[in-house]
Image (tube, rainbow, N blue to C red):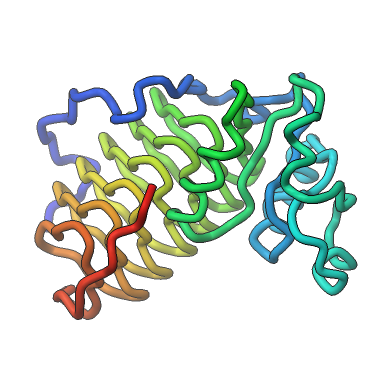
Length: 245
């Protein structure tokens, strides 16, 4: 296979589906530096986002969600209250969603965005971002994440530790790229889709929405929506129940 960085393929020119998202140009790594941030969630995923905020020089106000003493005791930021705390917070407060499941992020985003509440975003100082990349509101890049050039992330996309996304790739809203996965150039990852840890999507591939690519899988052909694919090369294992967004 030719080096993906030397391949010239037609770029996706269509607009991302969520056109109201205010895209954040990089390298503005602390995208909401003038606005206080809170994380919706108290799990390990939320703790990692709080840690990224600390590393980026932007400590969070705290975390929101059901009070579970075991989780609250390990939070690196204060537990502020239940999710409805946000309803009466100062209008300048922006939110991040500390959940790994994309369909859950979509549901919580819909609730949290009521009354015009805005999402922030975070980029680890250990992430690498090339020219002309853009991030949708709520997106988070973990340490070691790499976006090469002309990459577009939708709303509340989470790019895990060591995940790489190559040139001219679109990653739609609420997608999750787990640690160490690799997305080659001119590909498209659908809304709410999860790319498993260590998986590879070769160049010029489309992966449908609400699809799960299993850990370590190698995707060499387009994948439809609402399925789970596994293996090398990736094959459909079963259907994936459509998420309600």
